[in-house]
Length: 223
Image (cartoon, rainbow, N blue to C red; front, side, top):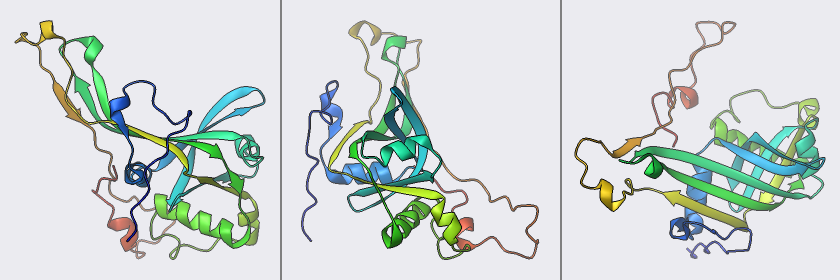
């Protein structure tokens, strides 16, 4: 199997602070993107910056995201303007002996580029990738989207050629004068995001079982 190429730094994707926290392996980018459920899409709309949460999914080196055809930010993105997509996973709150050194442990991916709108089979593939990211198993379980429903959705593809990953996974950093303190606790409070028990909609008959692809996620972590 050929090696996965490393992330290629560009002026926009090169870290300017805490450069030692940069991850240069493309696998680190995949790890962040594959272990979250929501991205934030940023662009300039009518002269002002707009950043909105968006559903997404990854297949290889392509990121897919979607929304209503009436969404102004997606219409603008479809025109080929520069966009920035971010995904952040919070792994822990870092408590230090000084307030200044409190921090977070995290994994964050930032992708720059120009998205392109999809149509036909490629659009359906993008929707499947997005569905599998949020609700794996639903594509083959729920009713298929109608032609009218497909027409009401914009699906965009963004190449992962220009991306950066930054992460922190360590304990608190302390000032020398604080190391001798004995009455102030310091450490890390881990953060885990997971799924609860499924709640059946009121209109669903009690005889209808929770499908395995939903039930199996109960009690599990996704990041």
